[in-house]
Amino acid sequence: CKDRRVNDEDCSVLHQIHKDASYLYANIEYHVDGNHLLTNFAALAIYERRFLDETKSRFFDQYLIEFITQFESGMHYERSISYTSQLLHESFLVFQEFKCEIPNNIFSMIDKSLGSLKLFSDLGNRIDFVDNIFEQSFEIDGLIDLYTRAFERKFEKKRAVSPTKISD
Image 1 (tube, rainbow, N blue to C red):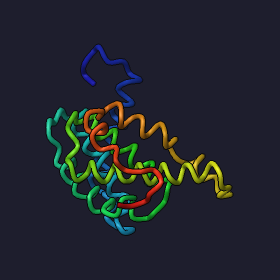
Image 2 (image 1 turned 180 degrees about the vertical axis):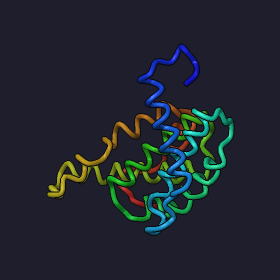
Image 3 (image 1 turned 90 degrees about the vertical axis):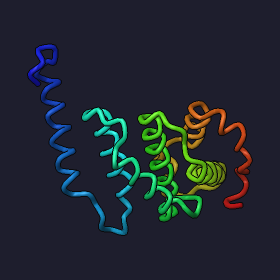
């Protein structure tokens, strides 16, 4: 923070971000069946893009590979509605940060997952799951709207996933 245009408070925040990223680089969570890898790779990819001015992050490529692994069935492999929703929101942030087209295979997985989440959301409006699962996750309709507005051309062509069906 040698730049005089940056105040002390901002310098402190930037220092903490760099410190946290350094810690994460050294402690990527490969354990626990890899359920935190997507978040680790997303955080490091966005960090490299934003703070190291990297146009292409090695963690972005790892993020794509891990996304395919964890979402190959149409929802996150843990089948948690709130975790699937959280990770889809996170994927939206990653794709927006890199301002890239979503690869077709990943787009299909996202589309299928959003359809599944919509089904569960609609059921949740009629069934009391008692665990407040929908209060813990991003609003499904809002998440679908985020993707639709940001990637409208693709979604208009691929909105074939029925919200009444979990898989094709």
